Amino acid sequence: MRKPLSLIALALALVALVGVAALFLRPSPAAAESLVPFHASVSENFTAAPCNTKSICITAIGHGQAEHLGEISEYALVVVDVNPADLHNGCEPETRSTTLTAANGDVITMYGTGYSCPATSDAHDSYAITGGTGRFQGSSGSGTEHNTHTFTKPGVGVATVTYDGTISSVGSLKS
Image: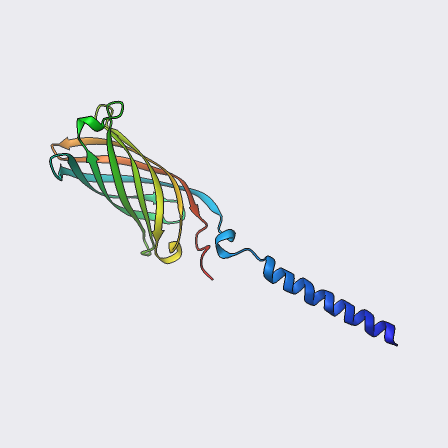
């Protein structure tokens, strides 16, 4: 009779040991976070005006579509350094702060640096996702932004913007 009880006790101890090991070997939320592809296309209207003697500030408002968000609105503030000493192959350095807002109000925020090229009417930035709200709270990721712009009159224009990269799994930091 003792042998079957010993086997049952051994089996229970083994199950408990596996359960404890599973607790300690479970990946942390950060490790469980995975990156998924991210793409957005936006049509913008923008205005440009001098910020100071060395910079142009561009305010852009747009609408489009984005993976994981659906229909979006976009707000961006771009600062272009027009100091000729800072030219890179005829392109001027810029920074871009962008907010993408889904129809339900969830937000992704991004910050990018790159170049605006007057001769080719385009700009290229590398961006990092700096956070968000709703299901994007605590999100991260990175990618590139490309925009082709046209001035319709001095200081005013339209642009087509694409964002391509990765974002941490939607809602991956939610419990």
